Image (cartoon, rainbow, N blue to C red; front, side, top):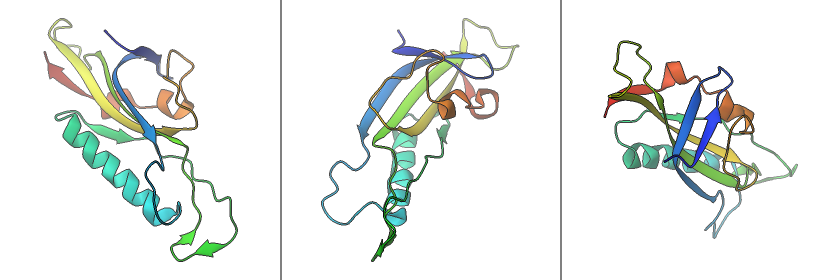
Length: 143
């Protein structure tokens, strides 16, 4: 059973089967949000998504970055990502029309950031999530 169904801009419905949310800067004990820290955080998220969802392609929706402070510290200017980090496992009908619909499905793991801890649903999901090119990024698997 899916947690939610998201309708992509191309019209395909995809089911969110697992969602992991965390505070983007939860546990940050020293330093401040900056490009090197954010790049490390994103790279770590992608590695962990590949490990946690083996066999599924992983796609990052490029997050918006804000620069609220005009002064640079030792690691460059303050750079802030949205407050909530999301890793979602999505499933849909098979991509290849030759595949038996009862035996195949397509899947994709998506990493994205959003301002609030809200489960995406329907046509109300964030535009970046709705714009995912499922046919180009997802892969078919046999059940």
